Image (cartoon, rainbow, N blue to C red; front, side):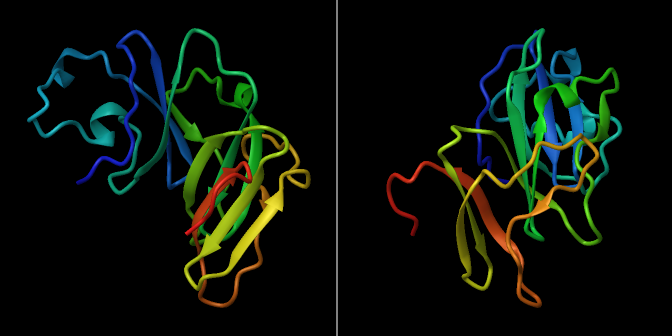
Length: 172
């Protein structure tokens, strides 16, 4: 498997993993059994979060210190939903819990810290439909909410990419 993102951290920090199944897991990275070298196989999500499902995949990792970050998280799903929730909603004593409610057959594609208010959201579908929209119509919702429809999909289509952009550069 190829690593797509790198998160530099320390063993005294908390790591939150958000998954395609819509869950938030607190990862315990300080256990001695997880000590390894760069050439070792590494650990699975189940090794780090006992409540994770076997087929669950991490879509975003965040390091938190003693306090939760300020601001909002944006969740993007394959069925075109977008959810904005305050970081404070994810401060729970439980190690694992549902972070976003998903519809049947839906899954989380990405989770991002909300960027500047002027930035827009881009969504690209497998059939090549693109949408670049402002974030003003995305209301803040509670942790268990589904979110709002970000893009209307054609039959058999799904979102392949979604992110915030600042209007600079090009999308290829």
